[in-house]
Amino acid sequence: MSYVQGEVWWGPAPHKSDPAYRPWLIVSDSSHPFGSVESIVVGMPTQQHPEGIPVPDDAWIQGGSKTRAYISPWYVTTIKERDLDDQQGLLSQSLVREAIESLHQYMPAPDG
View 1 (tube, one colour):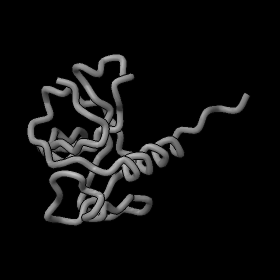
View 2 (cartoon, rainbow, N blue to C red):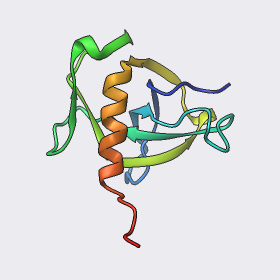
View 3 (cartoon, helix red, strand yellow):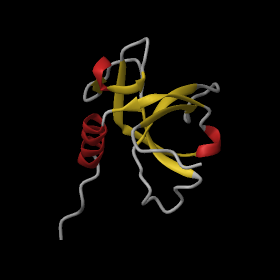
View 4 (spheres, rainbow, N blue to C red):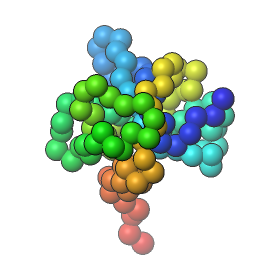
């Protein structure tokens, strides 16, 4: 099963001392070379951090969050789709575009 850019799924949170789960926003699309088995995702905490992108209630096209959610575009990883187990919803294309543009700001191409 291929997941769709903009979907929010629960999956494992790496770099935690205890096993933990969190929501992840899928930012990759069908051009991902292994798109049938994994996705590039960014974390969605409920804690506000500087540079975090707030997720307004009306940005949820499907599903939603009972707690205020934020997108952390610097918290990026690749997750095997078999490890995603509960879809939380789908976010608007404009908010997904904002998250991807913010992610690109953290990795500018070298000069020359």
